[in-house]
Length: 332
Image 1 (cartoon, rainbow, N blue to C red):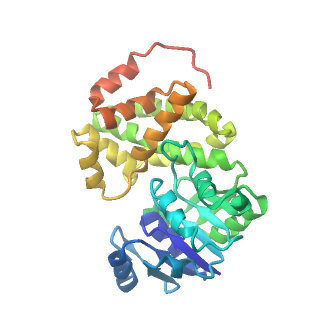
Image 2: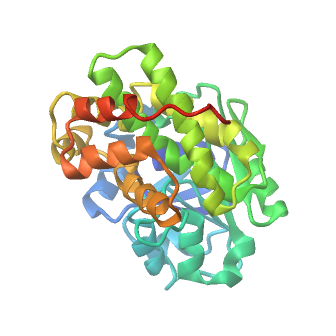
Image 3: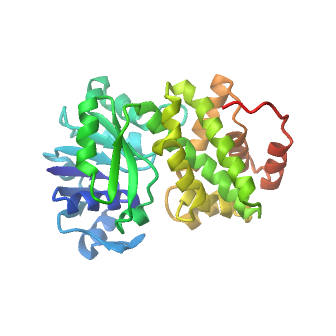
């Protein structure tokens, strides 16, 4: 099949390459003309030097060329960029072409999950053609064919299984899950808890502290998930707990590394520059903070991360505030 792939970051490149190796003809799009030329000519992604682009993968900065006659459109752009990108896609979109969202986040000010943003731009009539791929997956490991398990979801059950077949390989296992809202929400929220975990480790706290952060973080995610109509069980699976673990426990996680840099005294901007890639938790933290306040749901970890990143709260003071909260019965 012919696949138009939007977004040439590490995740986009690794998945596009996976599809190319399966025999599909993949055109990978980036808005950066220089980056497109380098990828097309060198066949090496500067952030993933351990992998080489397959011969079936081609790179362009021409969006119309990328989408022309595509059997599938797959995106891996930033959560902040998904709306402006799909406003451009709308000009070339052929009705009925399946769209697979692989980015993770919640749009600021609208409280929309990323598949909902695509629907908002392209229209509700495209709902049967929107799917999602999410789960615990570092691009650095996928490009090396290290065994990985993720989840496919869709508003349409048939498309959910088609996406499963599109991506599944001997090393990339895909499970179906019909809870589109839960899959999208779990993938978005875990990045905030990963920033908190990085801050905790950066301050010199131990595994006990991080275990508490992750467990209470999952509880916080489940409380907020009610506002988006998610199924609680989904958040116990790959798209929830699984993604939370891989993001909070690994130095490959840019959100975790970002948190550690904040703990070392870096500002949000300087830490982001040192990471050199999008830090989705930084963006989504604002959305989650807005969501919690709008629905009057206590979200202390999200609140602490938000205050650290956007109101210069000292990380040590944030930890102290979390530890001195009134103790209530643990309810799960």
